[in-house]
Image 1 (cartoon, rainbow, N blue to C red):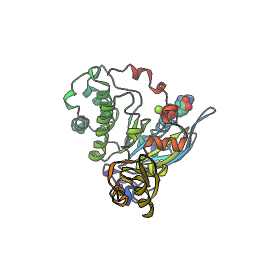
Image 2 (image 1 turned 90 degrees about the vertical axis):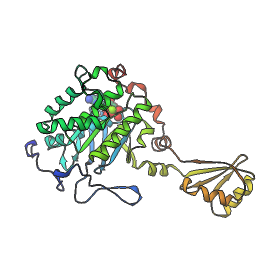
Image 3 (image 1 turned 30 degrees about the vertical axis):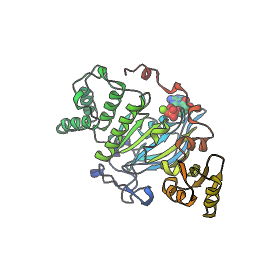
Image 4 (image 1 turned 60 degrees about the vertical axis):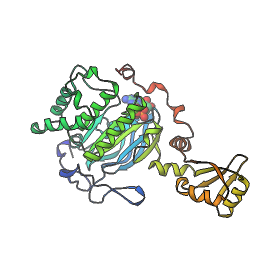
Length: 358
Ligand SMILES: Nc1ncnc2c1ncn2[C@@H]1O[C@H](COP(=O)(O)OP(=O)(O)O)[C@@H](O)[C@H]1O
Ligand SMILES: [Mg+2]
């Protein structure tokens, strides 16, 4: 098959006329299920990329459901950008296969390009043009039908809250605004899947939080599936599922909550009038506890749900309560044996991004 038979999807037939309608359903327990009637938004099988001796991506496999926000979390050099480049038809894999919205990334690249939006790790806007001119240029490149261009420009600018800056030169934009405009541009041709490579790199925490509001709004209002990469633990939390990628391999893949549960139990720590008595009362009731001088700690599955029961079972006056759930830092350490900070140096910031106007 050649790129010219792009119109025919492989695998189950996608309903291309309605790809803005997410076919995904949340199964009980909050898991994302892929509907049987439609192909997954992204389906990757044993994808490998070798650069000479260096195997940058080592046979990764995963599926992303329609309407899902899916994150690749990993340190610098893990293979995140290399994977995105293959899925966006910009780089040929050494082996393996992938489909986007049912279309084969390597055999039907034109059909795939029509269905994806891409925001690169490095900024690619023309600073000498206005926001609107950047979008118009993209509309031409992506052949957005003439009669739809006006409405789409309005809509995507509204989605990222930049409608007031429409006529302004991009050179006057802050780093965060420029990034949001790139996201708007990636959405202009109504893609089924939006790829965001480190969308928040180099931005301050407040701007990063705003960007996330935009991303979640795109999903709810446009039904777009979002695949993004990050090395920020705290923001991976916003994703429905996270694949932790290290040295070219996926070492864990699940929802943030499930990943944390794999790492260990929650703890409920009580300081009480009589820790010994509280400890023995809890133990008799079947709790696993550790009694110390200052406090008594109960190890439970879901600390927040059980805290009231634990307090009443302790049976003595309580002076303080602390619930701790393992965080993604604990998760990364658990699966890779390192902290993400150790493996991630500042060199991951592209030089021109560092000097990019703030
Ligand atoms: N064009 C290339 N030529 C040779 N090696 C590359 C190329 N692109 C990436 N690599 C190597 O592949 C590995 C993964 O890189 P990359 O996908 O950029 O990681 P990440 O995006 O997770 O930081 C690194 O070891 C990097 O040096
Ligand atoms: Mg990268």
